[in-house]
Length: 89
Image (cartoon, rainbow, N blue to C red; front, side, top):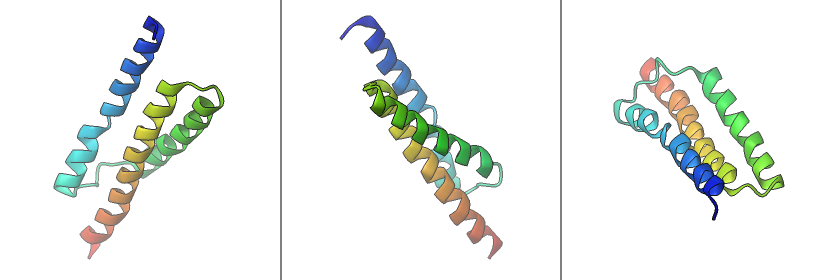
């Protein structure tokens, strides 16, 4: 593995980890009022496109990073829908 591949994996890790505090905080507090659903949906859709790009070009860091971010953004979408309904009841 050369230096650019290592750099790609480190960047992938950092990008993926960036979503963890928000997902954890939202899950723990069940507070979604400050989450913008449109932004999360855009992130979700963009990660799907990035995953397709990564697969087409066999770029493992792009595939890994965007798979993780896709799952985390999907969790935030689920939290936004579920916790918004609970707070209205």
